[in-house]
Image (tube, rainbow, N blue to C red; front, side, top):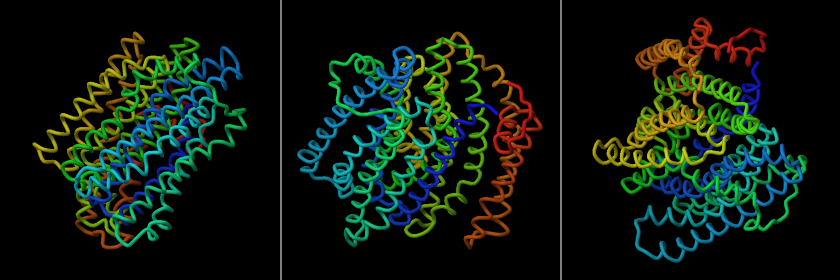
Length: 523
């Protein structure tokens, strides 16, 4: 069984736990608020500090810092490695704290003194309260990056579980105490975000201390490691967070048009994040330190092989996920969310957005993998240039689909899917030039067989959905469960069976991972 699947599978278990709780959180949120303007205001306000967190903590900084951290460990020893970590964390606290003070000050002293619609004023008030989450989440993200570089994947990935538990508790326990109207109760969710940020960072500390980490302040402006990381980080800020920036820009357009679209699209994105996070981000998390080590050793033959295997496994898993989400969009949304203030109309709008978002699932996930190949070699500028082009393309497409074609929440999904496909194509072209060859012939040869397996699974899933809707319906919870899980199971078994019959290597690897069988597979 490949070490890649073992390690990313361990991360995947923790991530699956987190994503399931994230799904539960979304169910609690939507039952509490529906997909109306108040939820739209909360989603957009939360998105802003979350974007800065990804840019400064989880995104560009982590991508720039991990290769430096690994090089320090290999070339100068652990003392120098921990010194570098403390200097970078000190710089992060200083910068993120300064940004937080600036944003909170601008919102309080300038923006909130103007006349706004009720939805925009609520969004600004929520943003002011939640923005300090960015500092806490940035620190937590760097802690996770350090632990990943030290070979710990499961516990760091489990940290998001703590975040989701706290945020769910804020709805159930705190919201009823803040008032009787939704526009007052919503501030409980914002308070929950801050508490969750503290809990997530604190959850990493026991393992960090066991590894030998002890924080002490180091003036970042005089530290050579900080300068090296900043030089690598600045051009990659847009590149590493292209997807998050895309989502924020497109939802800003949507919020200006109709705040409800933001809420509807957010639920669709949550469903997309389940397969994308469980395997796509888990695999990408494993690959960055692995590829960074291979790049330091200049072992580019193994570098290409590792990258090819990662892409192959990801395509195999996420192709099935894409097919199931596309053919079962409305039944899945109905089963998971249609309760409380989330009504039939909400189901229609969310499933409509999901239909346009799902075609980009594979490319979304592959962008994460191939971008990390650049970061591992110290090149953050190439993904940055590509992302700038894709960001402009995404904004134009969103505006066109939103205001000209009038696709509503589907506009955001279609624009993001097309942009991610373009992003992936440009990254592959640039990476092939950088490495001279990608050695992807084996993967390309599998694509027709993957397409055949996917077609069989898709036909089974679609036909069963049509039959169930015409003969059985979804009047009860049991019928809703059958409507989703019976075709999901049949289509998945058919897909795996076709993969084994057609001798797709990833199918054999997945079977070995689940059963522990010592079968042979070619690479």
